[in-house]
Length: 459
Image (cartoon, rainbow, N blue to C red):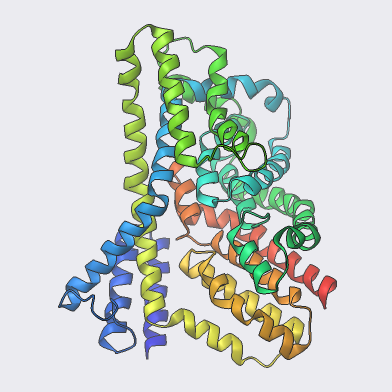
């Protein structure tokens, strides 16, 4: 009965999203129903033994409180600091200066879709160093996104292309890669260099072409003509900025400061200083305020501009963080009612050959990541049975392992409740559904590439 109830709730959530109901209210309501049903049916209590508030109704909101506290503690400061700096840089004209500085080389590319190849490659490299998909995407929305828009790339195409490479969790800093390597007792750098690299290279060879074809098709279907939009984004930025204030050319360097801090003080360059994203963001804002104070010879004016930082943090909290909390609450309901365990149990029950079991398990992980919006949770749930699959079928453990790792990120990047999708949608005034419509074909193509490569390489 709980399966029918779960399917009905998930179906209603999907219907509500398509009809553009308020997503926060939709997901929180769905989470309430799932958690309440799981508790009343004796499947799982809302809270562990000894932590109940004494009544189911209050337990439901205590669960919401706990998720909110956890989410704000983990990513809250990171996201609000990035959003605050992005808004501030736009307010003082730094984003405008960056677009101006890059306009000549970027606009020289007559076909803006060619830029998408460079973007996929660039973001893939960045993702090796800045391993948080949501954090990296938000950083790029304040720097790369305006450049692409001014070159005539549509908002949906730009956002999708920024997000797509974050599905391929490649590199020694990725949590899923570390978990996978440990599971089969392989040193992480050996796993990355000798096994992950060939998959990453193949994806970067094939998916950019798929992405160009798909985004161009979608743009034409939407009636979007890149030629009509070239240069318009800079005009928009200039209208938002004080026309009497001529921004110095060196302001184009200010949006790059966070990347300089994060790269310069990473383990790859200088280990003596530990750098985090919030520290990089607050260091950037400090330098910017000092420059503004010196430039205008007015501390008051520099401090008044700080109001833009506050507006940016409030915007990201009101739109993105609340939606992420609501999505996690919905995910908690799915977990409590047993939906995730049911997927795992059903996957185990299939009696298939090595290639078949890899396809089935990858499909279940992709589906789990799509439903929950998480790329880590399904990996942690499925990874322990990888050695068992290898033993039972007498296959190389890398055959099931690599598709499973990629499936988690791919499923997340197609999920309208994933934090990274919610974030970029909010920053670009799109809906999460708008974004996942643009990521779905490149993502499904990525999964096919990974599965075919895994079977060829390890079966």
